[in-house]
Image 1 (cartoon, rainbow, N blue to C red):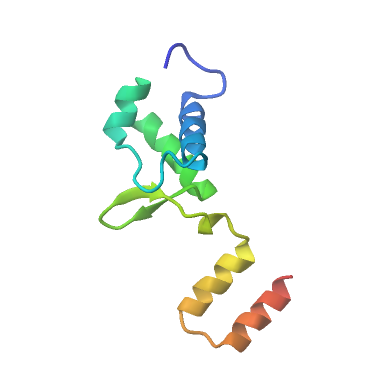
Image 2: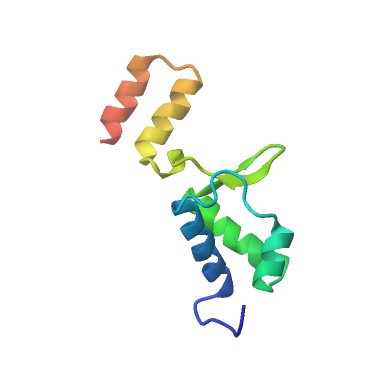
Amino acid sequence: MPGASPRGTYLLIADALRKEIRAGRIVRELPSESRLMREHGVARTTVRRALDVLQKEGFIYSEPGAGRVAGDGAERRSLVERLTDLITRRGLAGRECHALRSETL
């Protein structure tokens, strides 16, 4: 990237990737870290910081064997919805899930 940004180069890379995901140009597989390094002319740590930002926002996630991939939007659901799904998958009965949802609202 030409010149230093007062905002942080990693944030500019995160913004660019976020736009690509939102526009549907990145559907599943993200470009490799090496490719992102070449495209943006930055170090691996800068690319990783950008990817960490997107992971915390729920735009991407780590998948065993595949690395980081674009999310399907599930990670952008409310915390209550995500916790309810997690609890449901762990096998708790519907009554406990409903009680948890009622208590948190």
